[in-house]
Image (cartoon, rainbow, N blue to C red; front, side):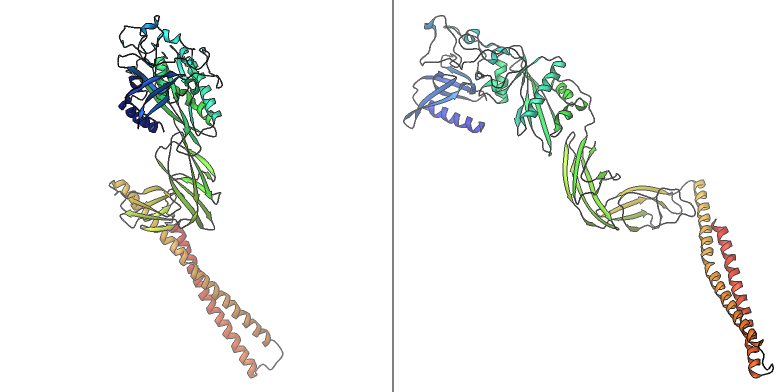
Length: 557
């Protein structure tokens, strides 16, 4: 809007200067540095009138004097800031000039200026030239040389009280609650005074229509202020945060002004406690004054919400941090990958997000969980290495879970530790973060063993492992003969029971030499013989099984 206004103003100046003047031809310079010829008609109530003929019609343009840096006629007279003359004939003026300003009382050098106090518009276009009397020539002077004669011709304003003072201008608010801005202004002023800088507080309304920072700076420069603190408070890029940016300008030399700037981010919910915690605001103001401040650990915050809630939240490479929704702190300054997942009945629902951390700020992210099948792929060079789960020392009885390359389904993502062992190569232990959203690949480069003593220890371990393997194999093999032997023994006792029944039948009164009697006697003998054979076989099998088990147990343990 300001650029459009200035463009239209310059066009108007060009048109006016091209016509026959009906006032005093003057050279106009704006506070932005733009220069243009125009026809000066006079000043009334701090409003500058410029006139000319546009399309055959005389037109007057009225603009507040704070927009101008200078208005000088062809003889070099300062038309913007006329001075009181002891001799009325010494003042050369073709048009009537009204130097009256709005009625306001001089403001004493206090710590604050009430918002409802009537303030006169700032004379921001005041020139750096001494009082001019008839017959004198222009003389360039330094800042803070507003002619005393001119000051005596009008009602004093706020700017008359700033000479030699440190000025703190209220923060310019941009979509921020006014209460927060007021609190920060108050605390910043207190800290500056504790640091030995007796600042004088000024609201932006103290400068009338001169609200832009450059205009305020130029006004204070001309009225002799020592230095200036001003800035803005606005919403930060991240949600739920505010950004404070300030500059500290030393108004010692209009041609070589020195300035420092600083920025800090605060949580919009706990802005004041965040500003005070860790001397953040104190260090911020020290930076504005050019003092070196030891770098502090600036934590970043990540707030994560998931659908559904209650998911495990992890940052890549860490264990579970919390259950969503929750907020975690980190000192990382780059991109951070966060994972959220649910694990229910050997099924996984998960989501991931890459977040750019902002020191001292909070990032907020929402994740929608989807069903996932995470896997861990383990490969090695060379291939064929045995894979052992966990970090416990590998003994001869430790069982491997596979050989490389192998892929494993994951039901509990997160940090996993595996060990790889292969004959002729050093054992390798690796901890890997298995993410819950896809395949995690782990590639292991195994190092050959060059130390003979280490090779000997590995050979001994391999020998013990083989013995353990043979022993457990024998123990497993012993189960079958023992079971079969037990079955034969059971069948043998069954035959003995049947032979005993036949014997009982033979003891009943009957013809001893009958055909049926002889048949039962033969059957009795057969059952006894069958039982004896089964008992021998069963006993032999049980004995062999026990022998194998004993040998296997000895080898294995």
